[in-house]
Image (cartoon, rainbow, N blue to C red; front, side):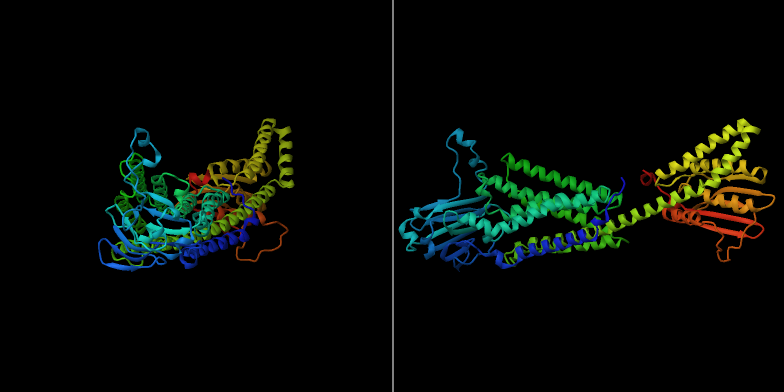
Length: 621
């Protein structure tokens, strides 16, 4: 695919994108890290709503205040106390719960509210959406009107008890992450959604947009489909979806009535995002063995994701219960991918830097695992590490895009110069005096030898067509093709010079490529300025050789020669063709042209084409 990039897409656009992504990363860090965005903008939201004391897993009783969150990890928390005196000012209590059962009851047992779902009484109820997976708490939002509370409870004259139970065996997050209560008016939850979740939601919608369009489009603009950019685009897209579901986790039940579907949505976005991370890591592997192993790892992990999804959808076991097994799968797959990256880093500085760039995420994951046991701060470090890592990956990818853009622009400039050089070479080889001499020779043959004149006319036509066709080619051509075209040129020159020009071929190898019309200027110099300047004429020899590291084309003549050490004189001739030939051989094949000459003895022009620079089939296509 040809590269077509306008220069106006250059520095300004890419610089703007870089600045935009840096700003995006900073905004995300602010949203995640600055306490201002963690404040409650509407009314009051807290972990308990009770002023009193609480006990974790039957342990000692601790003082609790409604305006403070509880960061303890738990399986069962009991909170005793009375409603905050401000409860009478609001008409709704909104309970937000994730993977937990909760019960709010009065001390005398006359008043009780719970999110537990009862067993279906009729066959019709058995298939009702709300009765799916009755033993799975899911993600739930429960609104309770304060007018339903007894007067003594609402005025804070009677004790209340809140029991929060985490029904799974694995360690849970802190209470504040699983359970929250808010005093509000009827629209309080939506106000909370707007002020708390909307900034993150809009930010990650933008991330999804960039993932879908920017990196894939950048790949296409550069003229080729880049697997690495496509994988990172998918990674950004699923990162955005993952963070959107995390931001809206407290509110999903406002739109999705089935609490187990809310759970399924959040967990699956998590697993799909991790799958995209593995795919992106694999896109940075180059060795066939490491890529094959990574393919197996990704296939096995995705199979496990499908398996737990099927178990959840068939009401066999929910996604929270299978998390311990998935954590093990994620840990094992991550270790394998890291080992594969370490293998790639041997002698590869870029691979080492890429591996280091993922260290913030790896460190925060370890901190989160450690937090399950020693309860560091009741905070999820993963989001912070993920933000730093993804921001850095974005910067790396944009820098890489800019570098490739510059290379593409340089490539276009080189192609333009090569095209102009080929035009100059072609023009130099069909100059009026050459055409005049050729046609004159053919005209003379028409009277002396009509059959030869006919053959010469056909050969001359094929020669001109070959020159014109060369303008369409941008890649090197096989030597055999160049040799056939060269023979047509020399056939015409032999008609002109007659017995004064003798041509010999010593072709020992032909299995290589070189720029089209790159040998003819050297032969033309040998004919015109070598044997052509000699009274009795001479011999021009075209030979090829193969060495261990290169292919060589040698054009030699026994003409008048010249002093290679002398300064170039203004002889009235253009040397553009020779200079263009040298440049094309260097730029397209990494080769060089060496001219050796002795006055009175002749000249040898040697074209050296390194084997390591020879184009392969993919390059030629």
